[in-house]
Length: 292
Image (cartoon, rainbow, N blue to C red; front, top):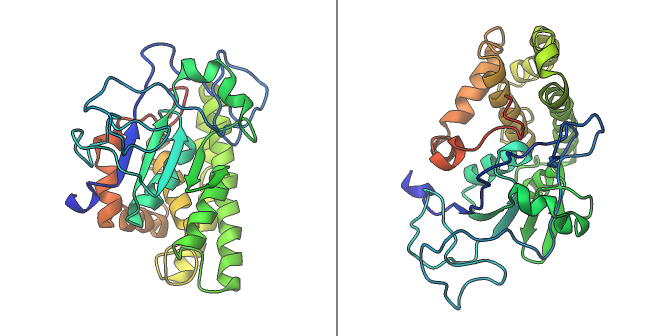
């Protein structure tokens, strides 16, 4: 746990009222009322920040531009030290949502990042959305590089940190499996945001027809990973989707020993375990409408 104590710096500005509601599509976007229109879920924020919480320590001249040294950190670090520039910055809503796999991946890779949390009231002003490439969050920053779209972020981190296979052939299979994970995620999001009350039973009943594909892949590969003998961004994505489904249906992996072993193995990796055990992770809801 001590090894992780510098990794997650968070700028919390969580709303006191009006819980965030989101549309059902691929990337997270708050809406004031449930809607049948399919607005996508991620949005990117350029140049704006949510309002900081009350200072835990005085601001210092060394604070990065646009970020406040008094911003509260997560349980991975003290709150009484000046903020230093983390390699990466994530701007997102106060939930796991589309940042779940990215955070898990960064944790396992031993990377530092800070988070800027956008609350409901700030988002509904509309100014942030107008500056976004796709009108969606999360926004990911690595120096002067700014990325939008959660899967593009995962691919970038995979390339940069050696989690994208050892050759072009492995990379192609990793892309294929990542897209397969996305198919399951989209079905899950449709359930959560459109059909939870009426469709949960049918969804859980049909789930084995989708999980069996990944069960076969893991059973054949024998390495414990989807492709080759090392972890890839597709593994982190699948892992996060399976964690969410274990909340939805705790017994969903009981008939899939390879998938069950996959989740247990990744959950036991020291840096992932420390992250999943942290209060900063556990206190975030999975989805924006309270359903899970």
